[in-house]
Length: 198
Image 1: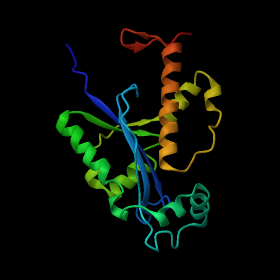
Image 2 (image 1 turned 30 degrees about the vertical axis):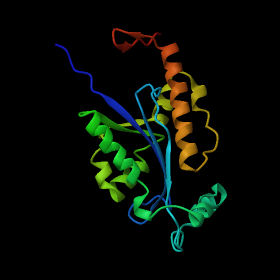
Image 3 (image 1 turned 90 degrees about the vertical axis):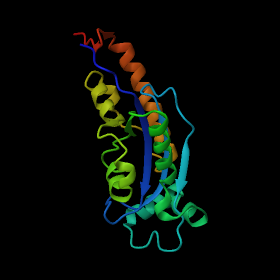
Image 4 (image 1 turned 135 degrees about the vertical axis):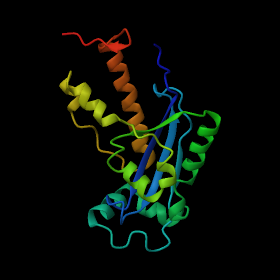
């Protein structure tokens, strides 16, 4: 019996928000790209930011204000950007393009713990996008933990995040590629499965 291997496209996404509660906070910045599972066929990055018309950052947690002041995001939103609810319009259109060009493709949300912040915010603020994404995620931080179970040096904390969407998603992809190379070198594929020696 043969099992058809699904066509998968990784949807690499990082969001910056006004806080961590999807019910009260907003999506302020997004960066995304798509790739194959090996992250070699990588499309150009896309960025989009909301424009602060005067009240976007009002009544937000002081830690959030401090973080996004240091990253430059608050200042950038005051100078440029699109309407608040339109930050992910470009991603939505691109997902439609993939679904039309490659029917049946599984669109897997990928990034650093995408189930923790990105997916809840998408499901709350852009359910039209959430419905197009597969229920599975590719979590680079989980792969780090898996690698760490074989080599504890992988558990050393990474450098501080950029706290800007583009830099963070670029870091996630670069680290994913490094992890793939390590797994390939240390766990040779045998009969379609990882052969774990020892």
